[in-house]
Amino acid sequence: QDKYLLLLLLLLTIKINEQTTQILILLLPVGSLYERHRVVAESQKSQKTIISSSSCFFPQQYHLMDGSRTWSDARSFCRVKYTDLATVNNMDDGRRLVDALGSRVTHTWIGLRRAGGDRWMWSDGSGTAHFTKWLDGEPNNSGGDEQCGEFDVTWNDVIDCSSKKIKATVCHIQKD
Image (tube, rainbow, N blue to C red):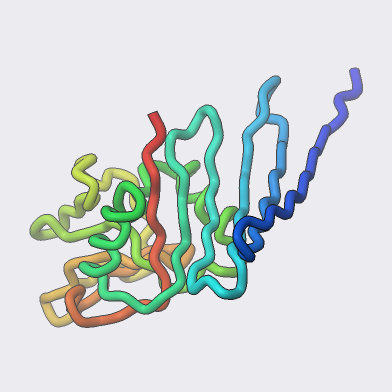
């Protein structure tokens, strides 16, 4: 029996109060159901770009925010605007995040923080980071003070989370 791949791609342009937003919706089959990936790019006037990936099976929506911030500032920003910095709980979360970010995956803050020794926790309080995707040789705690994590397809522990600024932040919204 031949099976056909049904791909639906929809581009919507919405203009509200002089601000244009484009929404690209891509539906792909997952078994007999569809996983939905949505990419939203705000107008050029805005300083931020939002990229989200979610579906009925996966409760997180990821948002990439441009703008140089420390890890602490990024966490505060995400907690005010969304839920928290992004968590990556398994390989599927990591794949969806990389797919959603595409070429924009480059040195972004995620909610990874050292809890002591070699134990890492998520900033949203969801617990220990059991799934990890460290860059070869990481985490190395260089200088004895690498306390937070950045995402660049693989993960890296970063020194001085309170003063080092990275150009982008990945936040998430927890859907119920």
